[in-house]
Length: 126
Image 1 (cartoon, rainbow, N blue to C red):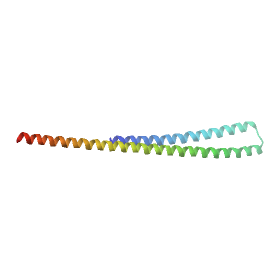
Image 2 (cartoon, rainbow, N blue to C red; image 1 turned 90 degrees about the vertical axis):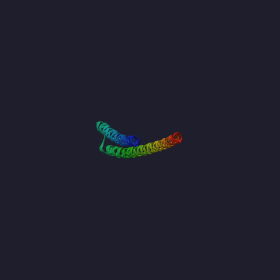
Image 3 (cartoon, rainbow, N blue to C red; image 1 turned 135 degrees about the vertical axis):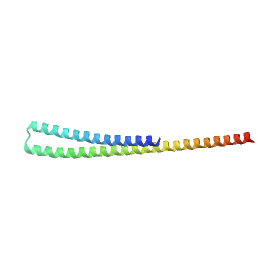
Image 4 (cartoon, rainbow, N blue to C red; image 1 turned 135 degrees about the horizontal axis):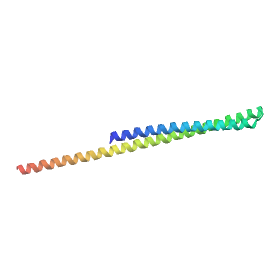
């Protein structure tokens, strides 16, 4: 059980890391696509240089806000993953404790059966 629990824990940690990496890649691609779409739309309008400068400033402010939002989401996702990992570890520890208790009970039962057999053998010999 312990080996299986460690394997499951390892698999869950790898899966969590892959999920966070995938989410980071998706967010970066979304961000780059939005920037590209905005730049393409603005170029098509043929705006004046002053207006473009204003829009660039606005875009930069939006991007900064998006980056902050994205980073906040990532931090929340990482915190959720850590919480899930902690819960998984807790469940594994509980299961290990249950197995230890089951093994202890089984050992006691074996000892009692052995004592009973010994007493039975002594009675037969007597």
